[in-house]
Length: 70
View 1: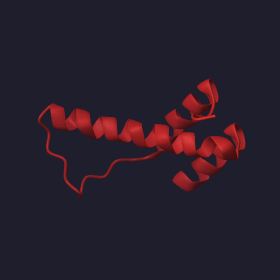
View 2: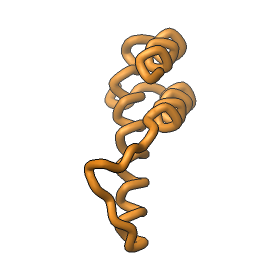
View 3: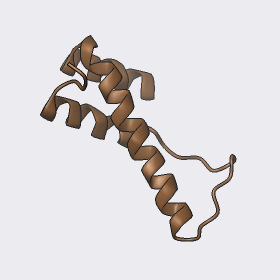
View 4: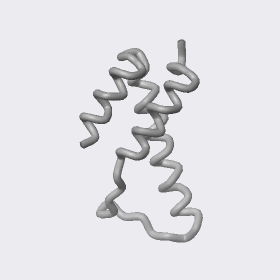
């Protein structure tokens, strides 16, 4: 699941990159929710959104540009 993917990402980008991974993943997830709202779709608390693809994108971006804020 998601914790295993996050642990693998930590092994790949290092522990110092994990906050950046989570930031990128959360921003990507929130941007998808914002896009759904802008297109007129309803978003409720019961909607389920897999976090794994966003974690993978966050790991990749952190690997590509490095940890943020350093």
